[in-house]
Length: 241
Length: 279
Image (cartoon, rainbow over all chains, first blue to last red; front, side, top):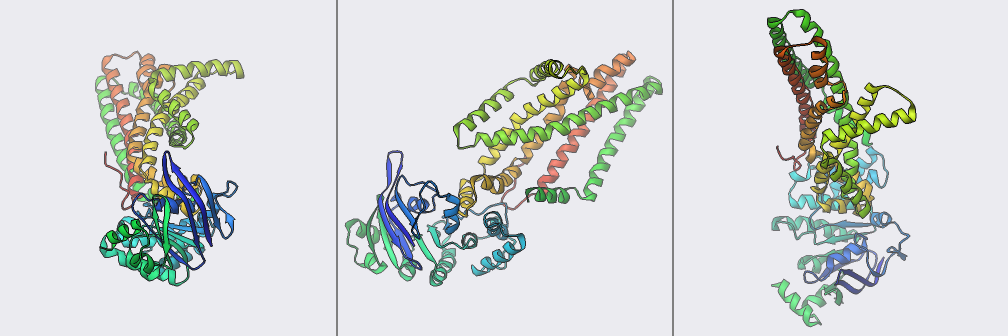
């Protein structure tokens, strides 16, 4: 589904991604863990071209999407993204947040977009909050609206950039549940998260990213219980505690 | 779709009840002032004077209203363009915006008015062979006021644009909106709401700045009240004083109408989580 080959990104002198290779098959969930500053977010942001990689290939179903002739908008419709800070549009209700991409990008007419948006919000358990503004929703509800907003575009892949890190503990569960259900339904997803329970239950594969390189790849059990690399061991012991 | 939502906003804002309320308040205020001034005039002089003066003032009021009605939207459009340019990613757009804003914000409006009057009249005479000083004055006044105000509005809108978290623009781009669409659909609607109080302030300034146009003999309130009426009637100090009171009050009425309207738009478009700071 998505293949990343030899991905490099510099921010000035900082070598954020140092030759990342990654593969994810359809209907798979991949979890990315790693210390802060290891390039996890940059990796995700490269995949949907919010950040332009400096070298390497990103293939979506065989198409090299970081080629200059490919419009980033084309790529982003096909790759959904959920952010740590939710980033809902403050001036729009939950419903309008979800509808915006449908009317503006997919060019659906209003009523069709509204039906679809309501359906998506229902799917994340917010059918009764369609007319609420982001400021009237809890963090967990906001993040679920953000997930519905991304799902409404019918993406082939979903990227989650620390989706629960900005949440109060009481709201983490509801967001993870939505994500787990999504994985169950067969959504291909790449999740940057340190939620170990979630990784164990949902992830087919786990990668450990450190200083812009993938140090280790394996199933969640392998990485958590038998980390092969010293740095992985140190990191895992820190977050498991 | 943008136009449609603008139309919806206008419909929701200007309900019959509100128009009636504001209209009545304005009319009552103005009527009270006119009666007061009239009594004053009648006390000093006879009513014939007053009858001669009012048409002058009304013509001046019409002129001022014309300048305001054209200069505010024109200044807003230019300001929006330049405010947008100032936050653009391309350095030459930012440079154009900066030079524009610094220039028109830095020049005294009076000087700007005189310059544009000289340039317009020279240009129109040479190119179109039209000899109509009154029309020059109107054109020059409109241009000068719009340019002057647009520089301020550009800065207000720039601040508004910058107040919208970049994460929201990224989120818009992440669902496939182009940068321009994200600006129009996500950033600007929030920037406008946040900017409204400051914009209302600026609109009030534009109204009062029209008085500067009397130096190029554009027919507006100050020119009508301060130059035309006295020269027509050869008035003495007391009457001049009364006329200026009336002129000042008319500015107050205009400013009040515009700032109330802005406040109304502010209230109607208010959204939880996006309340503009009170001035």
